Amino acid sequence: MTTATVTGEGGRGLSLQWQMGIGFAAGLLIGLAVHYGAGDAAWVKTLTTYVTAPLGQLFLRLLFMLVIPLLFSALVVGIAEMGEIRSLRRIGLKTLGWTIVASTIAVIVSLVLVNLLQPGSGVDPDVARQMLADGKGAAGSILERTATTPSGMDALLAIVPTNIVTAMANNDILAVMFFALFFGIGLVLVDRPETESIKRAMQGLFEISMRLIGVVIRLAPIAVFCFMFNLAALFGWDLLVRLSAYVGVVVLALGVQMFVIFPALLMIVAKRSPIQFFRDVQEAMVMAFSTASSNASLPTALRVADEKLKLPAKVGRFVLTIGATANQNGTAMFEGVTVIFLAQFFGVDLSLWQQVTVMLICILGGIGTAGVPAGSLPVVALILGMVGVPPEGIGLVLGVDRFLDMCRTTLNVTGDLALATLVASGEDGADEPLPA
Image (cartoon, rainbow, N blue to C red; front, side):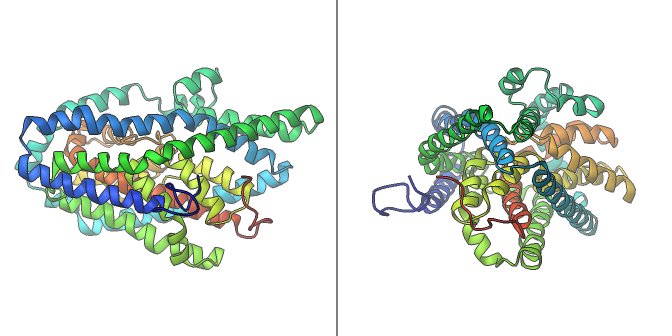
């Protein structure tokens, strides 16, 4: 399979992004028609529960099944290919530096917009109470997840796994990444003939994972249709109307970061055309928007970095695998705006310093946020309790979270590719593609 086409031979057929775009539009339009034509019919609930939802989840589960071996092998090989600790340190520091720059700008943008537009003052209290009642059950399950989430020093210690097999079984991405970094550094330090077989095995695991994901990705258009059909059939346009002010501020903040900040950095630092950049990464953006999962989008992002952006192998693998968990500007912005919005709604007055603290916690919390749909909600509930806002208030935003999750994941994945482009600027082998 090639990036250009997913059907036919010799370049015939629609490209993957076009197929996903058609699935997206068809799912949205048919879902809206069903919602407004037969929204209360029992068969709609049956269809979404037993047909479209399982098909979408099957696609995600197939991707998640391959994410751990892909992430582990890509990170190990990416570090081993650097060949020396000095190169690893240089790229690692550049990645950290640009992550801090992008995150700082994201904090400023979010604080300015949420305080300027005051979305929490524009919500009808009666509607909000009804939404809170509707979301009470789901909010309760999120709060239960929050109670089991490590925080503080426990969260820091949890990054270092006591058993890597257990960490993989529990889908503990940060712990797996730490072990992969440690293992990759060990391969760099022990540069002997005996370790070459391990490097080749890791390279083989990476290529097998990418090939299998290429097979799974053929299901993407069907999965996209299912995701959008469920969203539109169950919620309709009320999804956006009921919390339009809140949704507007979140989307505006994400849009400023996506279409103002990133293009400026790409032009000034990497000397890249933003228009060409967005053309190159559109497939990864569609995948991220459709699946609402950074982990599920990682294989597509790696392929885009290779075949479209032509980034050096060592940079693409290292930055994107790290960024899928650590560089989550969209998640941090969403969490921060949500906390401040709910504080405004419940009349909890937060000082500017408290708001900055909330945003910094969101950035750090984003590092450990699972790259799966709705993975940031437990972090939001945790922060709400810290600043004196009723954690149950998260039920207010549950109705629109799926749409916003899709938007923030798109920014996360695009931000990872932009970060990789910035880090690659000035590195040797800028035109060297990843091995086939």
